[in-house]
Image 1: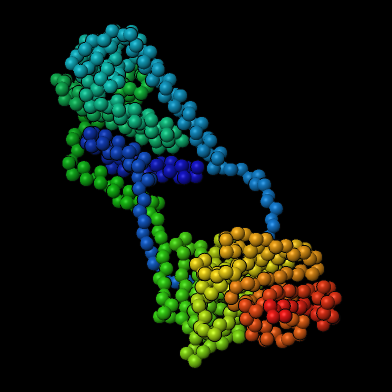
Image 2 (image 1 turned 90 degrees about the vertical axis):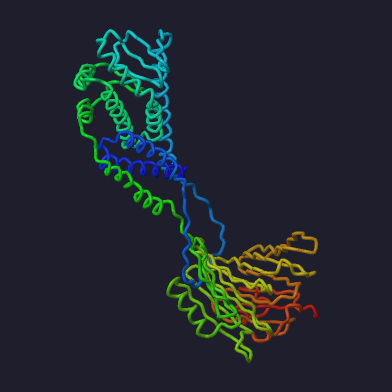
Length: 533
């Protein structure tokens, strides 16, 4: 709907360019045939050029990717009661086109009724029809209609000569094109003026050639004035048109200098500007930096809505500081990097990230014996969502929202990985938890439900494959207690666990934690149950 409205606006704008060149530069010249082709070309170009599109590619320097997480929430949809002005506009336009089409059909039927069953006199390829109605002479295609009782024999000869030029040069087609174009552009005043200029120029052509074939130009001009009071018929080439004075002025005007023909080319730069301004699509592509030659990579998508930042094993302290500064300065997102461990070559083996924004926070941790694989942070500026992933080794990523008790557990894994284990995504809410097993050996989806209450906010993560394990809980920044197989341990010992040995992870909060583990568990408890228990 919007696309069609924009198309009609482009058509109207292009028509205004052609009409402006004609009105300012061409209408006073005597190159009537050239003007005819110019005006017809204006209509055709106005209809076709909006479909011509060009594409340019602009390369920009990479932009640091950053963003914030928005926790999915259950939103109640609101009914949009605003007026759809696009629909209103297209409806009004459609009604106008319909009424204009009815008007055109009535004019065609009136013409047919006028000449139907009238006697026809043939002169070569022309058909002459005599009528008794008080109308001005006109031609339609190769048919010439006139009332012989209203004119002398000398006047009739000049009139028929004039109309034969219309018929011979197929001026009726120009007139019909003008009428049909006005139906399409009925709301554009320029379209009506354009049609009028088109029809007047046809009369200039017929006047000039008819007077050249007659011995007395003065008598021809007197005939124009004499028949100026006759009634006219629509959608035809009438011998009489309005502005008789202008026709007589153009009839007596000396031929224009041929150099004036160059003025028709004035339309070309205007069309170029139009195409460049409205019909050129610019694709923005980023200049990417290879991870093998630098310590980080970042780029922007073609629509400039999605940005990515990739941290690799060689990212330096300065690189991470640069990321932190860009996030805070440009996106108001805070990020910190801690517990960074490197090998002798300066490659990252362990890194922890904490991110927070106005609406959410996120923690991410990874530790390997080998240098880390690239970590990708993807940010969509439209949805305000950020995704942190390391798909090549399949880390578990847990994140929480500040404004919700929901916890989202995301597990990234290699689709082509040959593993007998199951890959789990857990969506944990207060009161009820669903752990959705994404894949088993047969590709089946398995769902397990865990029940809790609003105060406990308990959730479980089952890991049955060899994946690095990381998690976070919303404890208000206070350290929870950690238990492995019922034994209290320090937080540092959690990092030494092999996820392959973990059978179950339970997180307790609130009264449930204090009831099971005592008052010291007021900040929550993380309980690990291993397979060896």
